[in-house]
Amino acid sequence: MVANDSCHGGSDPGWVTASHIVRCGLLWLNWADGSLGSNGSSVCSDPCSSHTVLDNYWRSTSYGSGSNCDSDKRGWYRFVGSGGERMPETCVPINRCNTHAPIWLDGSHPSQDDSIVTRISCAHWDGNCCRWSSNVQVKACVGGYYVYKLEGTPECSLTYCTDPAYIGDPCSCNADEVCKLVNGTWGCQCTQELNSFDISNLQPELDCGTDHIKISISKCQLETMGFQNIIMHLTDNGCFGFEERRNRTLVSVVTPTQAGQCGTQLTKNETHATYSNTLYVADGMVIRENEININFNCSYPLEMKVSLETAIQPIVSSLNISLGGTGKFTIRMALYQDLNYTSPYEESRVVLSTDAMLYVGVMLDDGDTSQFVVVMKNCYATPTENAMDPLKYFIIQNSCSNPRDSTVTVSENGVSAHGQFALQVFKFVGSHNLVYLHCEIHLCDVHAEACKPSCSGIRNRRAAAIETDYVLNLGPIVHRGKRYPLAT
View 1: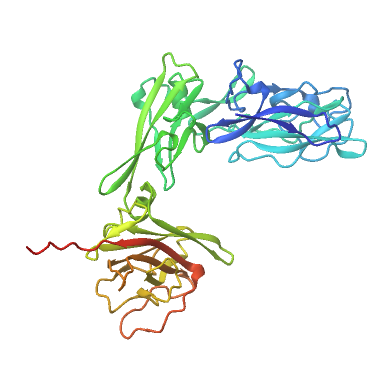
View 2 (view 1 turned 30 degrees about the vertical axis):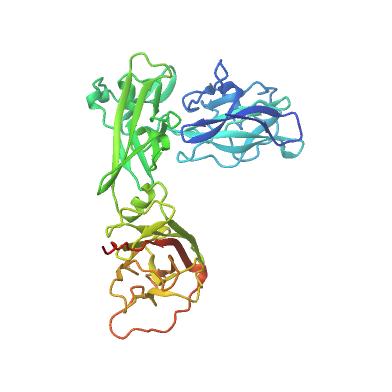
């Protein structure tokens, strides 16, 4: 947790409040001192369910003058009632909202897809629509309402106004909820059909994404099982739950597909990489009765890219390529031990004899794979790490394999986001025991170019003009000479 001072704009330099940056799930949020526990530890709570309700009809922008002052309004608040349920987004005339200087929101309200956003609140006075200003945090909540983190006022009399034109529906509920009036307030309540205390009826949803794994549980299911203050986290309790609304309200936790993140463990066999973790569900911060532990995992086929990401320290080269109007794309090249391209080399250098095979994979890591494919234009070896060393041995030239080397196999080029070739290891004549690989890459637009090389018949053997800005470099590969038994 990092403490800092949060300074708000305006002519009054004293409108300052102490705040703390606290990690809540996967987010870092700015919480005021009031959100700290009695022992000084940070407390993460959703302001949509932890706030104070303000039901004052005179906050309406259509109400006349008064002397109300909101200097004591500090914390999270929700506006309800006939005066309106959200702050106005345009300047309010003075002497409205039962005050002298009415406060309005300079900016649009967030959507439910947003997290907590920061907006500017302005107080109108003395011909200036923003005579005083401060930061206000706003969140759109499930149910169609908003909550606001207010910071009091710098002067009196200033009041936070509401827009009478915005009186939302009593409820905006999901498929598993009904709208009910409870303690004088309309709200979404879970349907009675979901009442079940049998844990076997719990139906978690698992999303095995390319770069993340998300596990979700219906909030209503948990509430009807007795979980009123739902706490969800993974093995690393720093990765915990957040609410998201689809056709129903879910509580979800996300972990990256990376070993060690959020306590995720990685196991591999010959065909798949499997990421495993445990979801812990409890009712509140202190566990006495209700607790659920759910073990889950996602398995991914060990194709070239996945195996490279699961390697501890793969030998890899990366290159950023900029295309006009498309941004930067990342391309990687790596050395593999097998023809399936699933076992990358993980040492700092590769030591091989000349009877070994070397497998090289090139992949478009970040980019529009629906439009661009990888073309390996010129791939060659040098005895030094200098890509422009005059001593070159071409493996691929002008996008086609070297016809004079029968060990070279190009299995994929110009047809997808991957490029693959293999060859038998060699060494340069003389005292050169090191081999460096270089590959000039072209991102080919499938909608505007002929990307697949045509390598049949007579080939163009002209010397290739190499653009070094698009060259990936790997090495060294160290030659291990054969040992012959001594004659006796």
